[in-house]
Image (cartoon, rainbow, N blue to C red; front, side, top):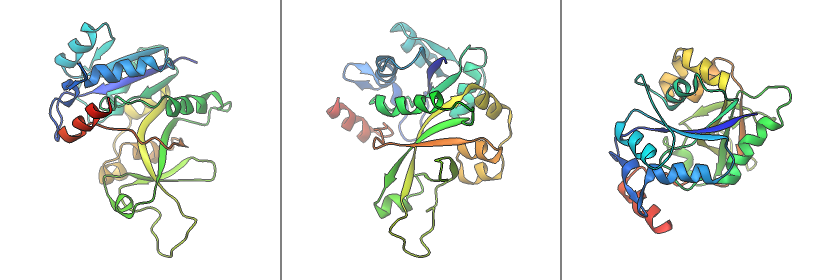
Length: 241
């Protein structure tokens, strides 16, 4: 089973333009993330896929592997699908370019899902973490997920799911941690499928997979990650680094 990591990296960012090219301990954020993925020793190969000459040259100049996007893409999955179309690979893991503090244990759990999947029932695997703070539960920027008894995703939403019509102390609220492990074919299928109403409404690409019958295995983790979305996040990252 050949497993690779792909890091989608856009130069433009609404909240923090050029964030991936900011300095973090003497190297750019995207280079730190690329090196962190390499250093896990979990992958047969690691690529950055980007629409930016600046990011492409940054990775290549440091001896890394980068792929230029040919088309414009609305989602990370589309960008990755185009990049891996002609690659000989079984499992593709999406590593976020703005999260240089990679958790090796969580990624190992995602890879193990496929090693245990003798029947080929899993199309995607992803991470979730329990949240208990009511502000997080009600925050539309914190995507929630509900799963069945086997850990497969039933639905993702920016709304509160399940809705607490009656207080139930046994209900756990799970936040989706947006790191995916795809079977290559599931990723290519996504690339060729149209956006439907649920995805368009919630603006969550994982709903396209569910709407077309793909199965997403969720794995619980205590590691949420440290994303660099604002200048303040970058300062926090520098202090941790």
